[in-house]
Image (cartoon, rainbow, N blue to C red):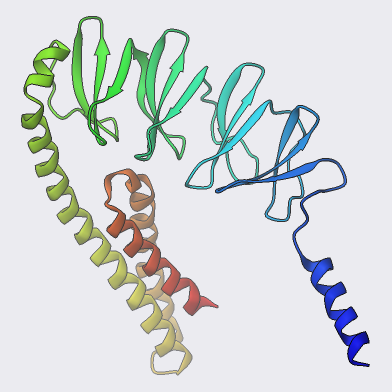
Length: 262
């Protein structure tokens, strides 16, 4: 009897384990994404290795935020983890800079793209080079502007790159000061968002325990949720401006609210 049980358990484990091959192609597990390969073509796959797109891509690469860099017919573009096009932006080459953005090239010109698909700088520069992990030179002709990894100019300069490099510490100080100011601003926004989520939870508790009339609780919830949703939209757009600690805090707030809803 014991032997039969062990055989049944082993069969269940094998049946429930993610497969390395599917009926059509070979499954490729990468750090951030899962793909399927059939001959020399690729498809985006779900976490079990089941293709969710056709085998139409020449190459696929998973990005840290879950999106996928795809290449087809000599062009590159971004897909969601479900295999949907993020937007209509496409380019010849994508060079990830490990700071939330990538330098993209289309023909002989360069631009800056976030890994979420937002175009941070239009594709109109002769070159873009990161000179620190967060600061880059956006070059047009013989002149350059110092930008950060969100595409914002540190100063609206139009100087020769050599002059900028001689004064690099000046630009680093401006960036550091701006970052600190941004951090205080977004901390305030996060404080308000957390307070709204807590108010929403408390109001629902009061409504469920009949300590607040239904009409009043519904009106209060509508006001809270309306403001919270507006802040959510703002926070989504601002992900590139927040620190890793702030992004972690935002994730914690949303997880707490989501767990309560369950």
